[in-house]
Amino acid sequence: MKYIVTLNGKKYEVEVENGNATAVYIGKAEAPAAAPAAEAASASAAETKAAPAPAAVPAGEGDPIKSPMPGTILDVRITPGQNVKEGETIFVLEAMKMENEIVAPKNGQITSVSVTKGASVQTEQVLATLK
Image (cartoon, rainbow, N blue to C red; front, side, top):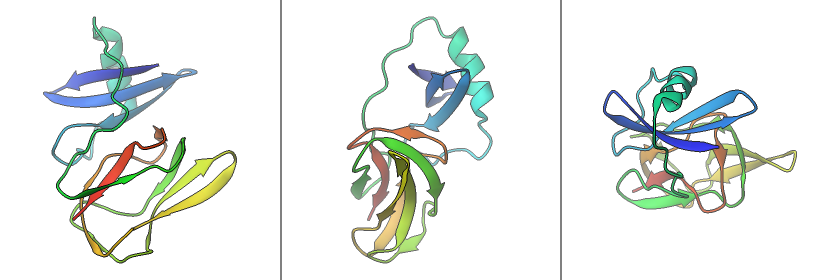
């Protein structure tokens, strides 16, 4: 089940499944370093109204890099502000027991990263933006 949780004025998308929680920052600034999923999950229980999470939320300037299929993010190899080259692996996505490399579609600078390691993603969900 997915929830939108506001914690310290910042919005997080929290997915709770089988007692495990995964939180993804969905605001316009980059994700804070210390936002444990357990804290976000306990905050979601306190929320009285939870709206379904949007499928994709662009978080920065530039072209969105979207997930080609549903799966779980195994590795995030980029950070906001980092320069990447076309074809460089920026994410590793597990889908149907296979590891799939998501590569930069062009040379540029990463302006935002919208997912974290361990996050579940859907087809066409924005993973990052590239300018």
